[in-house]
Length: 329
Image (cartoon, rainbow, N blue to C red; front, side):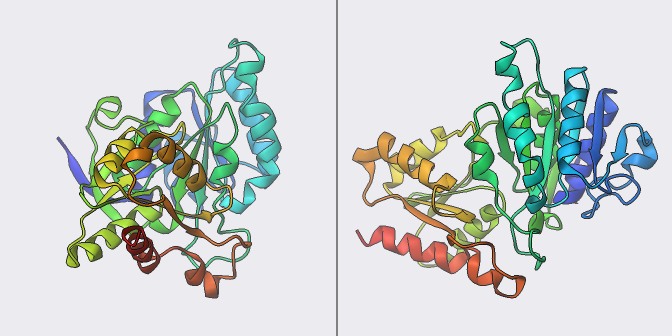
């Protein structure tokens, strides 16, 4: 089985290429995705090889991108829309929530909207205002949308292809500060069998506490688990991968063994994904818990200026502090 070491950005690029090759109805559209290859070069070379009728540079109008993609999806195409930065998605929010999420239900199943909305999200790159956000809760809260996020090159490669092949509208969140991190990718692995789209995965087994994360925070939690092991604590790290629908089966099994759980994400804590996850784990695992489910999140403030974003983002020390508090009960 062919395995290559790729960056996350390159893995998604190859996944997009495979999707374009496999289905002539796949279309990529967005700001600067063609000649430039995207601001993060994730679509680099695709317009050159597939033409400007399938890799389309759009006007700077996110609502127009999504609105056009809705019409294309209704007519049988599979549009893949790139929102250049997370903070740019809000002009398209009405189209996504009012149309994309509802048309299948409103038409009693007669219309499907097989489209993917790619959004680079999260902080850590020192960007200016509106370029570092964590908007996942807005979309995960919306019935009719599916929301997934990759944390490593293998998932970037496989999950983008599975999302494009799905008949459901999917918000595909890409952790932008992980674009340049490398990892092994099995290019010939059977996607649906080896890497199910809407499923969580244990990325590090452990016995003492369960740490749940997704997207950019998975690596941070893996680093925290390595540090904790030096002090004799074995943390089980689970990459959630799918935010809507949530797959917490592995989390329930883990917490029933460890008795402790910490949920980590970059987005603000108030009404974030961590709140829902903590509530579900408490309901399902109440008699197994040795301490409350704790959350490590961004602060309930607008995303700060780049020079102080490291004070805002959850880091290894904050994760380990939460683990310590979980053992203090």
